[in-house]
Length: 259
Image (cartoon, rainbow, N blue to C red):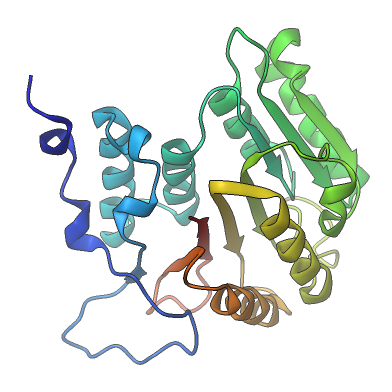
């Protein structure tokens, strides 16, 4: 069997380690969009990227995003699968309708029952939607691994047990799909939530932030996310983003990897 290095797809051709995320520089017309800024692959989970199926999934999602065939959410989920392991503790900081919560649950659940998903949302309707979705999508055993809280994401440290290593904190910023579009995440509490996430995520873990910018206030929130990402020390964090340069209201994915 060929060594693991030969099983890894050539993602390094797509990777570049930035010093910061802002300001966004103008891209020469000779460089095709979308803009991709990724960390060096050695900072991702080496054990997971050695798995050819996981690695192929990440590459497929990245290439699909570049060619306009995959969404930023699909890139996020592919990267999550390269980081999260069975039995891990993860946080869904914005449950919404439960799609991310479900995806995370499938990544951490196994027969040991050690995995945990802590989900939160400031809207009771989002918690109800997520709970209903999980009731239909998973069995009772798996559902018990999910702990849902109607609480602001800035207070995640109040619900995650002290000393519990967190592999991933996922944010999906904006408004609840199908809900009241006047109720949105806001820069102030999002910044506090990012600070909290950076304190609880373990070494080798990830903070994933998908920012929807097509609504009023969305750009302001992206500014806060990018400012926070840029402020992280380079010796302990790698900050990167996926952005469609010629689609100004397309969601932006920001990934923060803790070394």
